Image (cartoon, rainbow, N blue to C red; front, side, top):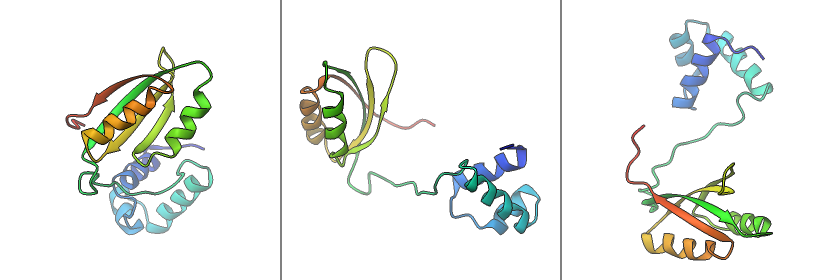
Length: 138
């Protein structure tokens, strides 16, 4: 699918506000509302737009601690680790990555004690290395 500058602008606007009205987007990009709706429909059908979502304020939800954990896995622990992570409500995402550490885990917890508990559990699967987020700069 060809994504021109107008379609990129539509995507940018949808990323900023997934609930933006087509009429609002059309004013921003200089097209009619039906033309914008058609572009959005085509991008959805092509899989460029996979889903719509919301951005949460995790602190207000009680998850004030954000951390990133890399883990160097012990032999044959990959599937057990993935199974464990899927069961943890604190885990936001887990990525298989290149390098010495096999996985990059993003999580949010209610407290440092809760984070410490998860890290302790992770030592069953490998050697975790944790970075706690101080602030988001971008």
